Image (cartoon, rainbow, N blue to C red):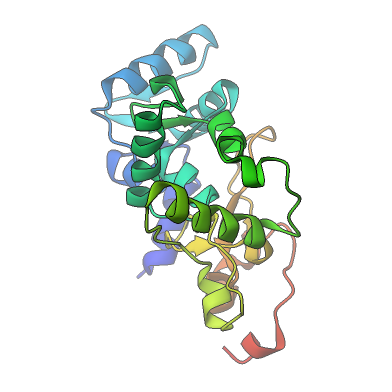
Length: 232
């Protein structure tokens, strides 16, 4: 009998997904009328089958997001290393200050340029160079506390936590098989027959280590495994 990972793989190899998988992958519901109507219109314009019998063509859905330069709030929150609740609090505070317009974030989606522009709302870091994303996001979270009075709840990479790294790497992406957070250095790329113009699916290094035999046929690049995890 297939285990949870095998069932998820079978689901992701089919471009048509149900609402449960839509929520799992993107944090989006089918009753998000404004988003879904926009997606359906765009799909028809590009001669793509976007929606069918309460199912979504996830390849077309991701192409739509890519074309429109938008992200689900779930993804946008992770990109700046925080929970969706913390992200929503940041948006509310910035709107109250008059820094952003409602067009940046609406209907469960975020304009990608909001993430790029976020540092510009804080002069002390707007032109500062950071060694890496860990240092930048740590500084951003600290500033959000100091200037907006927000206690940011960070999200960290599941593999980085397992390795007990200091500092921990932020979980900027999601494991498509477990929904756990993945850091930049611990992504494992998977080939589930997505169009070439889309970024491949990914899982965490920990998921890969625990399911090598199942995942081996789908691995794009064999990952390096830290010595501490080779006995897992």
